[in-house]
Image (cartoon, rainbow, N blue to C red):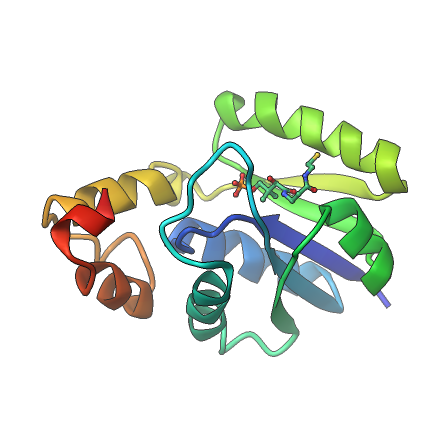
Length: 161
Ligand code: PNS
């Protein structure tokens, strides 16, 4: 059985993430979306809130489930028996960061990372800009799943920056 982990901070999940996860699920028997902590970022939503938003956004894909990763991604992959990590790439800026993490994860646990190119029509979408736009009251409905748009729009203006 092929099992991959699609990890990320998903703060919040965007249509770009959903596209990469959907295409990963078409290649694998099962995909676990791993909602993790990125030490370089301060997260707007708690890990459980991010996981709930992802679950709602991915509910129509039967072979995808969502889990919170409390520790190292490499340890999580070993615990669940995943052979592969799949990460989406929007461009070279993403690659520079991802290359280091992919090599470290292989060093830590032997798990291989595969990169999937993001859909060119969605490559401009990032969680941080979505939060910025929402914080200024701008339209985000074409950038994120409906539940995420509602969650961001329900935050007080200052909470969204
Ligand atoms: O969506 P992001 O922020 O690019 O995802 C990065 C993430 C969360 C996958 C990465 O920070 C991560 O793997 N965090 C879990 C802790 C861990 O394993 N750190 C070592 C990475 S080499």
